[in-house]
Image 1 (spheres, rainbow, N blue to C red):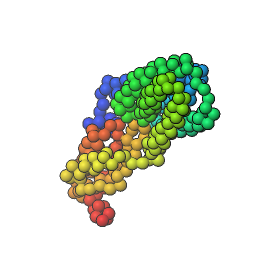
Image 2 (cartoon, one colour):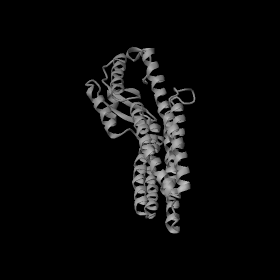
Image 3 (tube, rainbow, N blue to C red):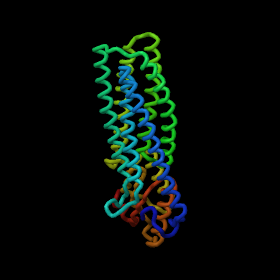
Length: 316
């Protein structure tokens, strides 16, 4: 039986259901919206200052924040669609929209990294000058960026963990990465102002580009795996097996299959039941197993299939 049925112990208080669905969804969208507003302001600030200062590191951060802005927009719409309930065309729900979102964000990060590395190399080769006054303003902008992104990313991570949202987690990683790069560039700009060595700015831009590219590749692996129906992590699989074995009357199991779609987990398994057990008893025992799995894992849909004990011998 699938999770969420309305018989037996699966009855859900309508008030609880309302709170789970609408309040959590609103929190997810609110976090994504905050990221959009923050990134929009930072892109404008960094792009203007970077252009007038001729600083490749500040321009790199402007591009980085631009990617974050696009990612935030994608995340906002992804979580909105992914939270829609199953329908006739999507019987397993819309969770994979979040994984598609995460994949697109990863591609954008890699493309941004290529552009930043290119700009850094060109600036190093041509040794373009830097405007000192605008560079001082850039120091202030970088400081604002660090503070703003710490606040917004912490909120994104908190909501992502609470709702198991890959889209919000990806957006949070973007902003957390922006914190590190902005802090590094802040220090670098201070060194440029103190020493006059513009090569520091170029090398910082190059480092930011390479770092962003690595993050994009790692993020793509996590986002794409659920689209390929990769099984749940080993720790979760082990817990499912332990739950099945904890029921002494269950003779055994096979054909355990798991996957993840956005924040939703899907588990289906065939359970071997004693030959002398009635259909009603076997059904109730299977429901007990399902309930235990649901209690152990968040957002999980469980489907069990009952087979007689004799079939287990055929598996040997």
